[in-house]
Length: 224
Ligand code: URA
Image 1 (cartoon, rainbow, N blue to C red):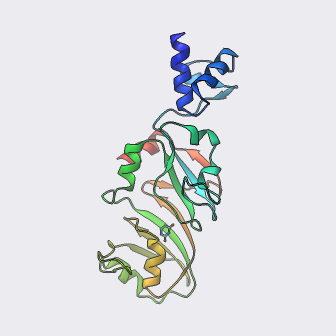
Image 2: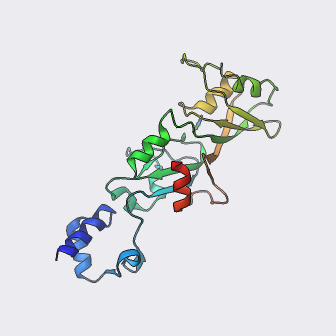
């Protein structure tokens, strides 16, 4: 009996239903195996607390728990929204920005990764409305660029020009609409934005709209 209660509490915390619903599922034989081989309706149980996953975010989805428009959480299994502690995105991408977005249920890791002190490099591929003029890389690397409405200059950022109207910008901070505002400050306009790197992680072939759980090694690299 005690083991059933413990198992029901564990599975309810992973979003499989209320404790009562899960206890009924256990009674009905829907939960099989044990330890690493525990299954619900024949499917392996979701990872326990400390889960980190990456999504290749499509355009048009908002990074918010609020109940309006299309939300990035709709792209994950609904069960993940019933987990306790809940799964949250690690920072945000604008609705129209695509690419690498992390999620975790580990509050300490979340705060570490979004802290201004984290300094993790993030790389954004930008498509611009106008050709680059040649002064942008020096401006972004200078550590003196002050965005409109702000006082503190942006930390030095690295710009790699990849075409007449395309470039990859690597930042170690994450201010509101930062990439768009940096290019605006340089007299240009970002038409499309895609993040392909977050610290040690790359999207590496994950299709748009798809997600996957990070491996133990990837999580360790993120924490390092
Ligand atoms: N900078 C932006 O302007 N938008 C994002 O989504 C991320 C970084």
